[in-house]
Amino acid sequence: QRDLYEQIRALPSVTQDGIPISLSINAAFLVDFAEMERVGAEGCGLFRTELAFMTRSRFPDTDSQAAHYREVLDQAHGRPVVFRTLDVGSDKHLPYWRMPPEDNPAMGWRAIRMTLDRPTVLRSQLRALLKAAAGRVLHVMFPMIAEVAELEAARRLLDMEIERATARGAELPERIEVGAMLEVPSLYWQLPALLKRVDFVSVGSNDLFQFLFACDRGNPALVDRYDVLSPPALSFFRDLIERCRAAGVRLSVCGEMASRPLEAMALIGLGLRHLSLAPSEVGPVKAMLRSIDVGRLEQYLRRLLDLPDHSLRGRLQAYAQDHGV
Ligand code: PEP
Ligand code: MG
Image 1 (spheres, rainbow, N blue to C red):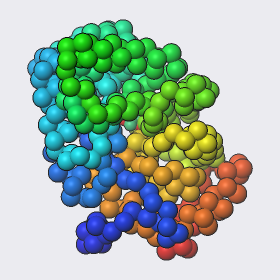
Image 2 (image 1 turned 90 degrees about the vertical axis):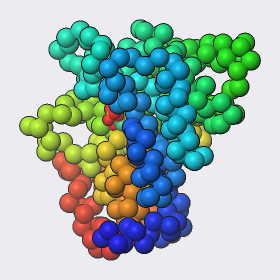
Image 3 (image 1 turned 45 degrees about the horizontal axis):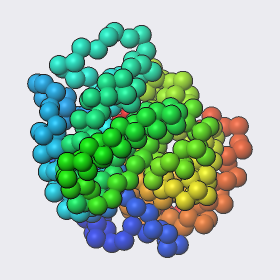
Image 4 (image 1 turned 60 degrees about the vertical axis):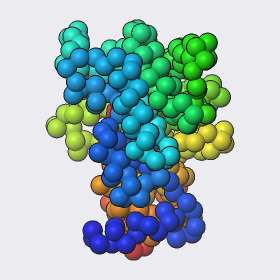
């Protein structure tokens, strides 16, 4: 198997019927970028900035953040890197930040909720990103956006930092692309307003799934209770993919779902064309997509979504087997 992944590393990421699928990696540390090269990924679709903050003994100042992000961009050698702003709280804690105890931390004071309440923190991170990406392309993504007003508030802070840098005569990024993570279901019902205001959307399927099904992503008693390969979850993706495509906004999935070949196959069959995944899974997912005929898969999948089944996993597995995936 490893040999196979090695062999297809340099081959195009294209399905049997000629549809290109972009594969990026999820990263958090500089070492991940060596992996990006090694597995032949197109870029980094999710850079979890908070993980580097977690390994420090105090909150890094703007300059040290900028130096770190600059190094990340250097290591990416011109390939796009999507920087997700701090997603602390819930399962990710900073040792030097005391967090109030919460009954429901996953639904608590975390990510964009926290950084909008502490704008100096978010501004410092945005300032560092603008500085690091001077003369290059900057992709910024805001996590846990539940309503468009939160995105607007975050964008205002970004605009303030752009104005500040301009007033100081600092070199700006050549282009700035702004995206939102879709991982809180409410945002789906504001899609028209959202899609007018972002360059891209990325689904955090780990959190999205937990909120769609009201099912704690970390509770071992629930791991087999619901399936992402079920009619409600896949119908959600079908509608989301269609609406983003109609609006011409790039949509990717960066949760663990995209890292699993069968799940990735289903997403591609529903029209998804961008996946961001664990570096170790690029080989298996690429092998899968190079063997599928999307046209045929699409037709098969559409018929499944109305079934009352608890899970479509068995059927999709059988389809994959029958079609030599
Ligand atoms: C997700 O929720 O799917 C996601 C990609 O973000 P994280 O796992 O870091 O919460
Ligand atoms: Mg998340």
